[in-house]
Length: 99
Length: 455
Image 1 (cartoon, chains in turn purple, red):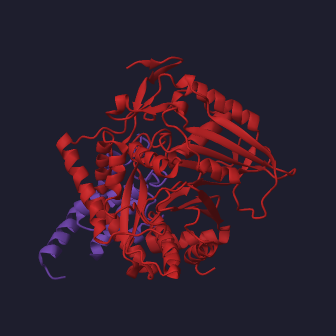
Image 2: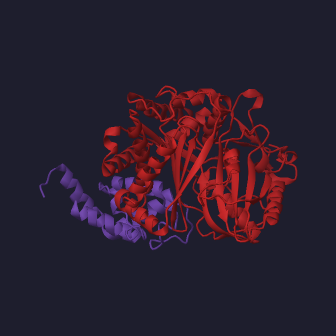
């Protein structure tokens, strides 16, 4: 990897975002900005069952892009990856590593 | 604010949403040019056992408890934003439940009763609170079952709201809710208040108008041609895929457009079906412009029943890309993302909010000005799983259920899709004369080929 400006930004993002910190950030965005959920919502809650729809998921991806610089293509948003905030964070972390 | 007599807690008036006013503008236009109204339908195909008298009694009790079901839509002295007049609503006629008995079943099991099309083409009065009616067609034969159409003015519900209302009726019938209960919080309250200043909302509305005006660089031509004076004569073709074909279509939609955005696959198939007709006709559409309704219920009011809580995303594609299905889907995905990033869902809400104060004809003119006389190439809607979890309705098994969505005589074509118990339903509503019989078959063949992979 050549250390141009973009790659440096990605390296910085990778060092800033562990899988746990990504889980926490995604959980916060969902709870506070995107979904209407009660205290029963946890990082293990199924996202589609919690009300994540097509518009909400795009807004979530835009927020994640803003936080990490990585855009997650919709084709990667499988039912397995959208199982909960943890599985989604694992996907984002993997994309950060592969970027 | 005065309360409504007989229903403590209801306000005397409730403001229309911007989307309600958008639809009111088209209702006025359809009234003026096509002698009809903008009426939508929810259709239930029920097995035997449906208890129509129990249903009628509950509708009456609901109408006695809930003034929205017969509220007049008015504008004070002809100026200001229109509103539902709840005070006085209880003096208006209750929604009718009309039973049509011993109707011979059609040769084609997919055919819908002619009375349903008649209802779709009726002239109803918002000012008189004629918002809702039901028709039950009972077929001859011991095990024949019946069809039920709930016909509603588009200010009373949007598509999701109409499904919530049917769920609510069903829950009341099961004793889980009471028709006398007030609606859930958020159902009557104004749409989520905007945190933007007046100026910011004005800027957002102008950005939305510039975006829509930009489609005028390639002004569309619909199969119906520009708006003209002609009686509205909508009919509906129902296409229902069996479980195996639906499974294939759903898998393809997820694979090619994304698990969360399958509507872009379905929309692409609908564009290609219209293009198949245009090409066979030797017709140059110049471009395809298609709006996609987006559910924008405020957080915490996801099950809101009344009023219209939608914005519109608009798409424009040139015919050159339509032949390549995957390229078309990719283009729709890119346009959707760009529009969401640009804030056009919210901008559209702001634009429609301003339009609440404008005369209806002015708003209709604004919406049609990008392509002279034209609004869009066709209407499209995808509403996902229809009445998920509901297996029966007042004692009758729900054999199938779907929306029959209205469309003005221009563009004169609407494709609405939804899933019900593992089967994909497509209702193609079209103005009589716009598609020949041969073109309807071509439309169907193209759609099925794209959805099912050549079957």
